[in-house]
Length: 352
Image 1 (spheres, rainbow, N blue to C red):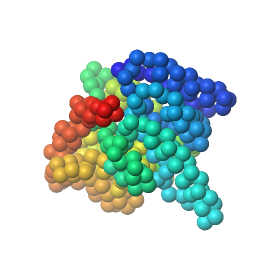
Image 2: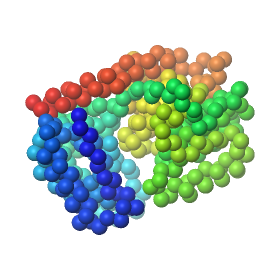
Image 3: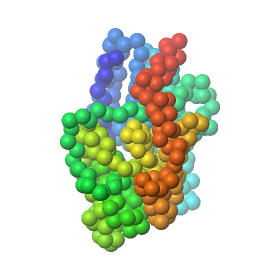
């Protein structure tokens, strides 16, 4: 395996003209074609091919036309599943543009020998619109694998008697931090909400959202119960922090498969996991032995959410009895070794 570093062309700090971004994409294609690889595996994010979806689609189409080896494409984002709040006329034209954009992208995907997505929900969306892709489309969930954090100091340490509700990942608007903060007044005083992450450096609205969360904590008087770690760059340091959780809370909005990585990290710690009812939160619950590896709840109801947290964390509460066994089944089914076997089958299909 030879990794090939791709450039984040969506980074506004790069200040590259369009022709320069196009030249970078074409140069990468030439380098890969000259390599001794038998197969090319593209970890697709739109930002690797341009600034904005239209430009990214053009450069991706150019790349797929000129690659001279079998290609596997893993889609980390399927952006055409979010509802729009536009008015009727603008919504109509927006839907037309969306259909055209989606068709241009799928035309490029048809050149791939195999396509990988991380969730069954995304799989169903794609084959619902483009059934001809079914024969080459595979679902490979992100691996659930603990990260070794031995000897690494966490950025925060739990105090004796505290119980930690951990909400990991970038601090972004779609992650529902407000629901978590609103539940704190309904929880015992020893419960702490740990927001384990910082604002994404490229999120232009991130600082405003951060200030909004501080204002909400101020209004509810829970300032001493909401802990922020700030941006975590070291995966081992993050793992050391997550090990201290009493439960994980993922009150996400519906964001396609974008929440899968954080869900996988949470499940790898073998602690109770509470999620919203967003479809992306059911990725690992699709088989009998993993169905109760997490529990979903209406996170907009702060009292219901608080009751669910208490049931999962309080040692005297009933909790979700099969959760621990089902989380072990998740690990058995979706560990790094199992994920490698799944990708080997994908590669064999692409080379056949």
